Image 1 (cartoon, rainbow, N blue to C red):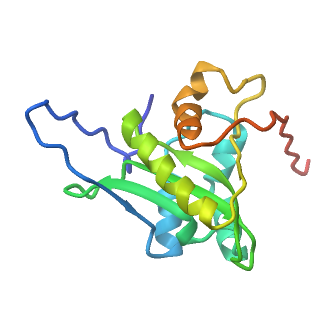
Image 2: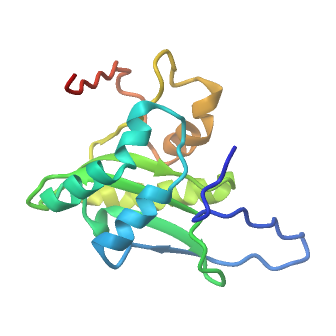
Amino acid sequence: PLRSPAFPARPVPRSEEPLSALQFFHPASVDEAIGLLTASPLPVDSPTQRRIRGDDHLDDAFTAGRRRPEWVWAVRYDDDPAVLGTVAALGSPDGARVFVLDHFGLPDDPSVARELIAHASEEALAGGAEEVGIFAPAGTAVEDPDLTALVQPLREAGWRLLVERRHYEFEPS
């Protein structure tokens, strides 16, 4: 898969090299949050995944208060400023609560992806989140191998499948 320049590949350390600690953080500003979310890799390619990373959606969502920097979680190694992955949520415009984790740009390393989702889930659940939304291409089931890298760490973080829905989006002609 292609990688965004904001998420460069990181060499896998040899077993004799000490592992760096992970650092979880929230972006310091709306601009930083938009930059992280725009650059985050798609978990699967779908029109909705591309749309929620687009400038129009992100500008509107942050301006309206439905996305906030404190509802964006990112991870990097403590000795490297390169961002490895992001997770973000949508919430109420008044900031009272998080509704749904719906934006995933996961690291290639499954253990780091698992830790990022667990960390974001813990904070989102404390903020009121009750759901995760995955915008997958038409005809994709939750057991599809293309979703394994996302679904497995969600399950390990305690999420269970509630319902599979079709998602329709319309635009003016």
